Image 1 (cartoon, rainbow, N blue to C red):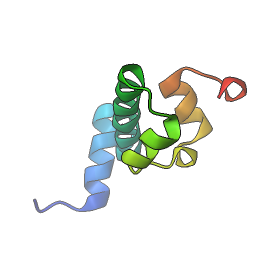
Image 2: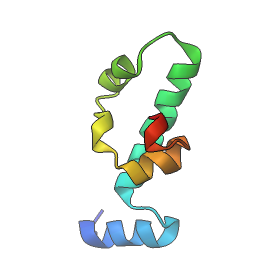
Image 3: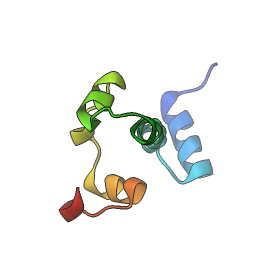
Image 4: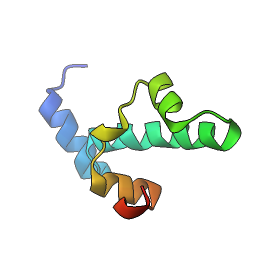
Length: 73
């Protein structure tokens, strides 16, 4: 693929209204939700398996994706 990364990122954001990073975080959180629903694993264990550091997600994104407030987090 002969496309500049910035152009690709801008095109994705224009088409989806989400940054590529937001899309990846959303996919990771959806996988984590499915694992949580179907297992007894802790959130920390799931984050470790998915190589995802929960503190990397912004408060605003977490609230949108998980539909929780900071107080309930």
